[in-house]
Length: 115
Image (cartoon, rainbow, N blue to C red):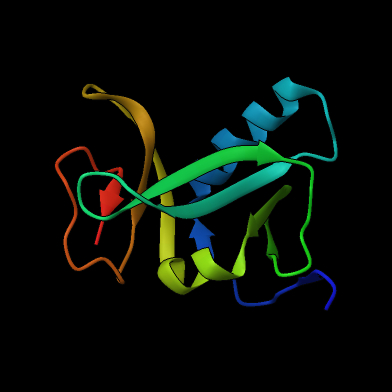
């Protein structure tokens, strides 16, 4: 199986998240980089989110684009992220990314883990 670009994203990026990730990727200066979003066992609620820049595509990746941003999600993480949205806010409470995940039955106070 080869990596293919999907029409239906596993995780959607809000306009603000797309813009911020695009700026951060531009600062890296490597056109091959994309955003990898993953779910790993751990965290205070059972699973935790990971986001990092990655230039590698694996055969089981679900790959989509949001604006100029390539988004990669491995197949195991895709099961937990289907229908989720990555948001970015920059307000009085601070700046940061958050994930609105309809698959999460509960999440911890830090917003970085869920079950």
